[in-house]
Image 1: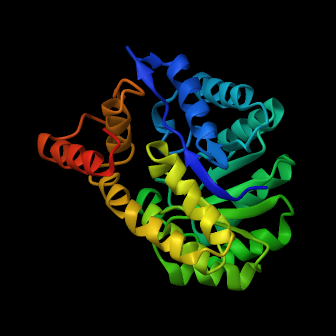
Image 2: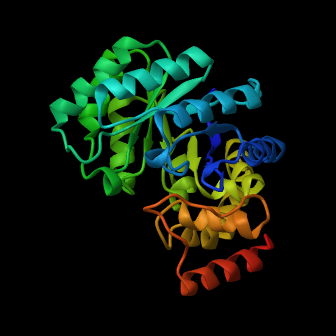
Image 3: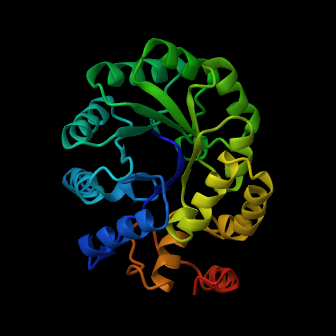
Amino acid sequence: MIQGSIVAIVTPFRDGEIDVDSLKELIEFQIANGTHGIVPCGTTGESPTLSHEEHEYVIELTVKTVKKRIPVIAGTGSNSTEEAIRLTKFAEKVGADAALLVVPYYNKPTQEGLYRHFKHIASQVEIPIILYNIPGRTGINMAPETIAKLAKECKNIVGIKEASGSLYQASKILHLCGMDFILLSGEDALNFPILAIGGKGFITVTANIAPKDVAELYNAYVRGDFNRARELHYKLFPLNEVMFIETNPIPVKTALGLMGKIKDEFRLPLSPMSPNNLEKLKTTLKQYGLI
């Protein structure tokens, strides 16, 4: 089942290479703290700067490390349809449970282009597909009508990570697609509201550093303890804000570095945090009890 708190896990680096041991440790940290699923090679995993070989390696390593304990939803999107197909076929071959495919960035296709892109990918694989709509990064918004058309015509397009920031759009998606369609929050600050409108969970950055609380927010909601879920929503709110004071994943990798879990290393064009924002991050993490 694709539901609950699904961490968009970082890709740790050390001296320019993938830090395999740290990645394995991060995966175990997530599972031990109740995370319901893992997304390797998403935006938070710095997929744009991974080579094709590294991208495949991280997916396969995650699948092998998780060992079917929780679902692995591999990031396999691209602004090249053929590249997305190749990555998705690879994820299917190595045993990922689903694939996350972002709206093509930079080339800004029309709604018809988006429809044809995703339909063609879906026709080439059997693995469940989660669409990923994030207009702030891709430069284009996938309309709810386009999403509904794909959901109707492609049996393996089963859900969407919705990161437009619009609860209206998220509600319209479910209105058009039906409540069985898997709506996942792509904005940590909207995780609780997304559940309230019928969402099945969230693909989350904040769970990298506070997995237990993010998972418990979901668990409390589904068991009907709405007061506890709301309490965690507001407890997590400062973390959710500070995770995005600079471009993701700069703050979350810096936070994990401060927590002693990884080396806070990035690949250009991402760079270390500014001194002022670093102090804000440290203050928030201290107040939360993470450092």
